Length: 152
Image 1 (spheres, rainbow, N blue to C red):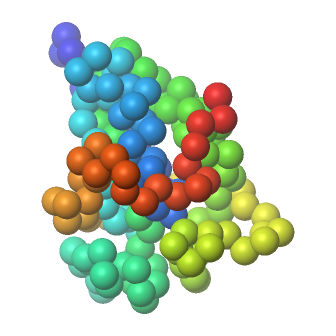
Image 2 (cartoon, rainbow, N blue to C red; image 1 turned 90 degrees about the vertical axis):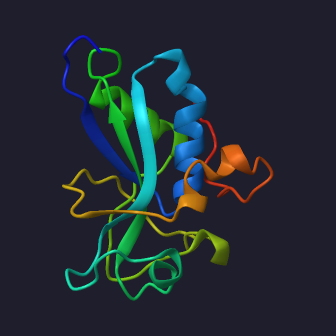
């Protein structure tokens, strides 16, 4: 990486498996396209809830968002490019609303609901359990949110 300091971008889209899968598909680490490392986990949430697990986050009680954390080389891929790929790929303009959680397993976003992209500080980060890391690479037929598909 020639002395460049890696940067970090965090993307939350309701489900972390598909987000990680698509970024790694188009920026494979082995091909040196800029992504150095990914991890899925939880961000935001209530301050008194530390190191949440998947089962607890899925209850909606912690207000954490499932997210992807990308460590990248800014000399190979710019933050703006990653953000552009994210918003174009997922066609979401997601307003982070920690007052409720909508699970894609329960039908995704309510019909007719407006969604808006918001770029905000991610807040504290908690890695998800090991079995979630690169889940769709390890389980190619695993569940992937229907909104997580290419549009570019």
